[in-house]
Image 1 (cartoon, rainbow, N blue to C red):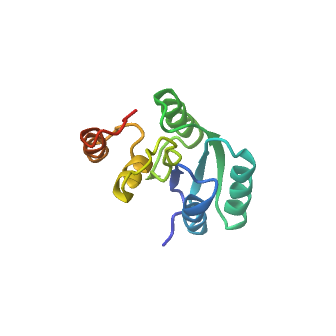
Image 2: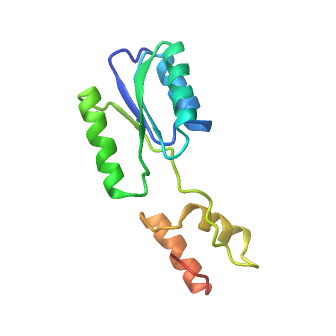
Length: 137
């Protein structure tokens, strides 16, 4: 599939699954905005691989759990590309460190996905934790 002339933003694309998605889109010719939070070196490496795969793009630091960072991320993509054709929401907060002793496997999964309630699914997960007597931040 040709993606020439298309632009993409992939959150959490400096490594792992996000990097793989960026490389696949780059192979099709897309220009990629590579988002990272802390590992600039990994993001630069991903950009080099994107370019080697036939794509182009730029790196941008932003924590997608912070509204101001999200605004900065989207404004930068607009300034660099002028448009956004493909958005992949791949980033997630780090696995929560507040798991309580004795928490069930389901509770740990919930904690990993929902340190801050941001959607209906995450909110329900946090409500279940609270009803179980567990802390919710």
